[in-house]
Image 1 (cartoon, rainbow, N blue to C red):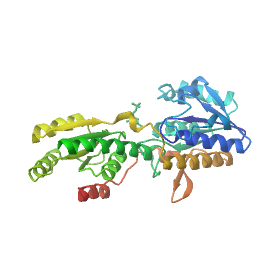
Image 2: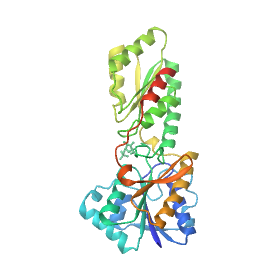
Image 3: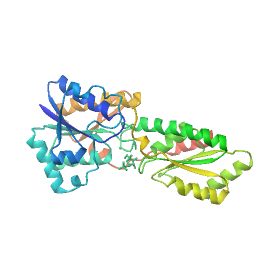
Image 4: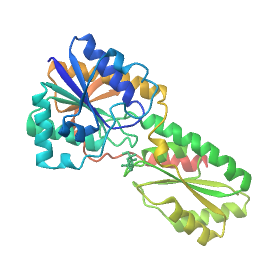
Length: 317
Ligand code: F6P
């Protein structure tokens, strides 16, 4: 294999992974190009030659230096064929796709339908890739949300208020669960669990009568909207409630050490196995070991065990 390409989504740690891929490829004496703007760029043939120097000074930066897109065109047969043409016309023999479910599904399509050699690196703040304990970007997202939450707590405590804080995660409650436990929150509403709003309001009211005056409830975006929950609590309890939506700040920012290390390890491993002939798999790192899982497994909806975490959150409240 002499020439490979990298295509990315954005989250913290992706630049560290790009750097690792590029420098590993260069160590092997191979050529590497970056695909600009994700699958749209692959369709349009927007490629950028990369070398050791082009990835200097990016290990600490969030987002992706290659830019990205949510490509609608890649869902179509003609978009996919055009993307494959770019790969063949440019002598690209292998592709590394760094991204979440959507990007990895695209990688699986390229491998199975068009026989392209593809390796995925799981990267999404949602941490919803099946078989993968920790995707790139998830650790930074939890830490960013936690920092914001600590600041909100200052106001919640000072004004004796209830706060509903909405975090990202699409249909996965990973960020919500981790932020709630690490942030010492009283309640968390998750897509994976039924919610008893009447019970929660009763608990808040009874707590208030006993002198517990400030509450923080984390709500996962895939479950409900923070403002709707705040309205319900205000109506049912009469207590002053505010909502805060953390939004995209969770996807950006300076990657944590964990995300940089993960990017370095996974990027290097991805190049090695691609070169050795593995395809249609994504790389993974667990218990200090690197291994692969089939993309067909990785893109299935992920089930997370929320019960033990949730019980602990309630015990520690
Ligand atoms: O998948 C990452 C994510 O940030 C989700 O948590 C969120 O639901 C979604 O992307 C937001 O997408 P967009 O940036 O396209 O609005």
